[in-house]
Length: 116
Image (cartoon, rainbow, N blue to C red; front, side, top):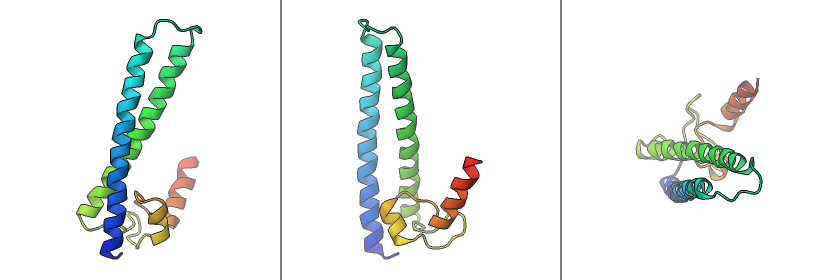
């Protein structure tokens, strides 16, 4: 992959990392607000809210990990190589998923395997 394209995708990844960090901070604030609020009209509402916030937190922590791993691959000059088959990851796939660790084919195999 050409260096200018890698730099552009790395910039997108860095920007996404900052956005995720802000989101995680906001989720932590929301969690503290749930704990402070004592005026819930529905007794189950605070637990449902905590469950939702916990789910979102796990989602964004996982995404942050994927972004950080992609940035590490950039720094090690192996960004764009499939971690499974070592082939070059398709440029349009990286445009869509700049954190992609696997080519489209290998990711499809992983997805099918995980579902079963």
